[in-house]
Amino acid sequence: MIVNLPLVSAVLGGSAIGLGLFLVVREAMPATPALGPALRRLHAQTGATHAAPKRARHEWLGGLSRYLRPPVRDLALLGRTPEQYTLSLLLSALVGLALPSVLAALLSAAGIGFSFVVPVAVGIGLGGVAAFWAHHDVVNKAQQARREFSRAVCTYLDLVALQLSAAHGPVQALEQAAAVCDGWVFERIREALRIAQLQMQSPWDELRSLAEEIGVPELGDVGAIMQSSGADGAQVHETLRTRADALRDQIRTDNLARAEAITGRLDVPGALLVFILMGFVLYPFMTRI
Image (cartoon, rainbow, N blue to C red; front, side, top):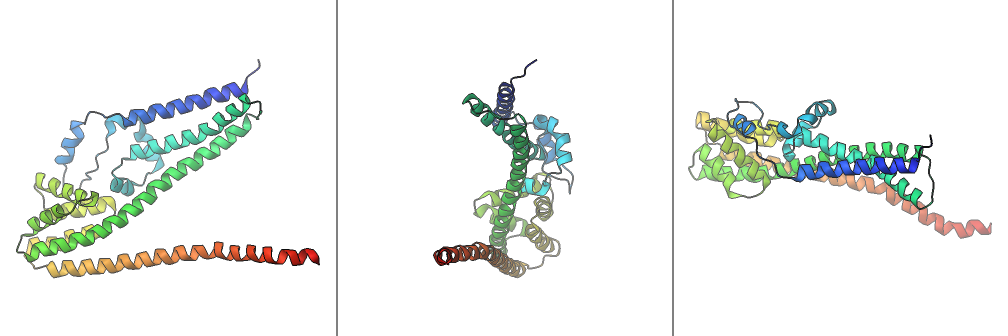
């Protein structure tokens, strides 16, 4: 029995691309909100996580996501679930796996023959690289979002201190300071404060839970400082301003360290460029010897 390898490669590649397009369209279609997870989130116990995964649509990815060990805090910061992270890795791997087969089929149709082993081996390697790149993209975006969150916390500390100086209570100061600014960071803070209000909990405990969930300890400092104000009635607006100044100094130091690291990496291409220019200058003299 003779097997037409180009035809098999084309069929497998087309099937993989079709599956990937189906999954993308399926994820893009709006789904009916699940009432059960929303109610469980509103009535969760103190200290419980508030990032309830939408397992109604991703149950088949739940087991696989546990084996992949996704970065839970990074995903919580970006507003994604472990199932969505697993799906993005699978789609990236499928695209990388199918691309060499499709190219080999097109080249075979043009009269350029390839061994069946070449597109398979290249596809496996490219699939692994694509999956790793998808993971690296999530981690990189989470790092950028965490730095942005820390900068926004500095502003939030100053706003809370101003509200306390205006003789507002600690709870009212937290809510009004979060309502002043726009952006996704303050939206997350307002959401945490609304959850605390609905659950009849103290807002500083909810802020510390959110800080632990997304890996931003600076937000937990706000909760710890405001807890002393709510429990002991202490005047903490100066403490908030001092913490904001210290956080700005820390962010400035981290930015300078990153800038120095990037500058240090640029020294190697600069040195290589000098050697290349020296080669161009010395080459005519070397050829005359």
